[in-house]
Image (cartoon, rainbow, N blue to C red):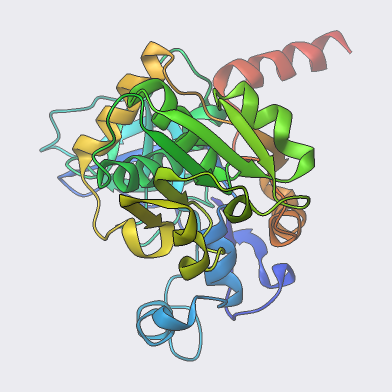
Length: 321
């Protein structure tokens, strides 16, 4: 099967498209044919080994001291189940699913991935595409997990810094449409319209204005990119109030309950994934280059394999062409 591997840390060019052995599911596993994944910031950080200083030693031991321990990146996916192990009861072949692979050695940059039946995998909402589903697990769960810590009450004022990113776009929607807060989004001038469309009551262009100098205070401030100086940000925080940083407040470990909760919000239309660009698996280097620029809106999606519908359309085109 086709997969993208990396054997050393470095720039996007260390990613190589190659052939590796197709996995076989164990008794408690499902084999997913991957249709879509994402060029996640986490993938780019692992590829280049540019991690926050506080996590440097842990990351070095976990990812590999001299070279990567896990050759295939990819933290989230969407696809169809092709086969199941003999002990599997939750899923069957043909089921459309979406999943996080963060706790199973990543591996979504490949045509197939095995996942444990009781892992972070769920039936894909039929209201969204595979590409949108692939962009839901990590960003949605991270935003939900952080905001839940604030115990947000309806009508409270919430500010999301980095509101146009993969976590920020979900945070704006969750804070407004799920928690019922009054939301202010902070982003660049190019993304003001996007953030407003997600439900933000007010938007601030950080290239023109420092939100801490406005004289306004907020019940909750969420730094969804982990880049704003905490001490400075707290100047705009009400007392008592809650200051959240995605790097320190997203927690560890994964819970299926969180993925299922995000699924329900997607199905009901409370939240929607934001996709900036789509690339093919063959364009993975270009996709990582774009993410490295630090200006993406929401998610960058990678099409790994065409869905059956697309394959049928392509075949029809070939026959008619």
